[in-house]
Image 1 (cartoon, rainbow, N blue to C red):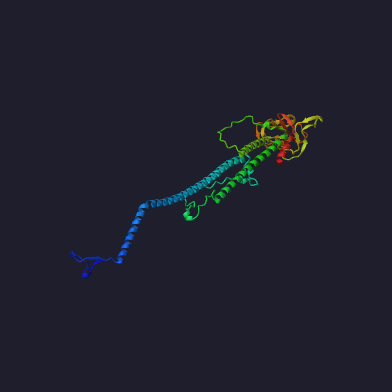
Image 2 (cartoon, rainbow, N blue to C red):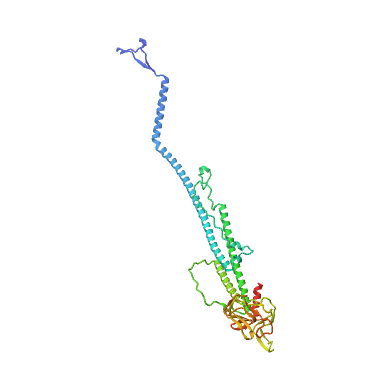
Amino acid sequence: MLSSRPDLPASTRPPSSLPSPGPERVWVVRRRTLVVAALAFGTLALWASAATWFIVFRDEALARFMERQATMQYAYEERVSALRARLDRVATQKLLEQDGVETRLADLAGRQVALESRQAMLMGLAEQAGGAGMAMDEDGVQSSLAPARPLPARAPAPAPTPESLGLRTEAETGAPLPAPSPSPSPGVSARMAMLGHALDGFEARQSLVVGRLAARSRGEAARLRGVMAETGLDAARFADRRGGGIGGPLVPAGSGPFETAVLQAQRDLGERDALRRIVDSLPLRRPVAVDGGLSSTFGYRSDPFTRGLALHTGIDLRSEYGAPARVTAAGTVTMADYSGGYGNMVEVDHGHGLATRYAHLSAITVVPGQAVAAGQTVGRVGSTGRSTGTHLHYETRIDGEPVDPQRFLRAGARMAAR
């Protein structure tokens, strides 16, 4: 502090010629005050320097700060973009997998519809073949005629979400996200594979049924052709030349191997049925119930009355007097009367130029114009007309010409043996 000192001795005062204006003050500065002043001045200088540095370099610092912030923002945005891209890939993959499952299910459903259509074809073939029993044999073919089980209904899959896909950020997992699975779940694939395998087996059994039906039809047709050959007749003789109108709208049923096999099986069955109708109309049954054997065959022989060579136009069958004489095939009675050397005779027209005669009857039980069924009684065995004893004279004629009846009887025996 500064202080005045007026109490100095007079001897110490400087001399002066002028009068003194008054007492003189002397200022004294303490050390503490100097230190405080120095600190204040240093602080002020440091603040001034800092303010000057901030004013000079603040733009550069702000630019560096903004650059760091922009770098952090770009890195965050890139990470978010990567996560979004990964989410999009996973979602797309799931949609593709769903589309693949739907496509496979649609394919399986289409195959089932085709199998059901084939099922209808098979049932038609079974009915044409004489009932479904032909197709239901000991080898388990019956199962192929059972209706196919419908595919289970499947609800549409929900849209994928990050939670449903199990997607989490790298910050949550601490590791990169796993790659999306390239295929649907093993359980779904296994079930679809099992269903496809079942449809394959069902389709194979259907093809097996068609093959067996066709094979059986061809085998029976061959046997019937053998019967026709035994009689010496041609199937063309029995062709229906009247024809018949057929038609309807065209609804194609496919042209694959299965449809071709079904078409061929239908043709084989049609041929078998035509041959069966022909054979059923032939006089293949025996005219007497009890086979007593032949007393005379067809052809040239020694006439029992003249002892000369003569043509025997039929066969003589041993039988008891009054035994029923039965017609050997369905037809219409054209004659039922006494006829010279035949005695009491019945003639039956079987169509297509075929006719049979039953002679030497003791009684006639039908009238001309009457329709008779196979096995029906037309008279009684006797010995009328040119006869030496009780027997049945039986003839078969083709276009009015006598042929050996034993050809038809042998063919009938062959039919009965199968």
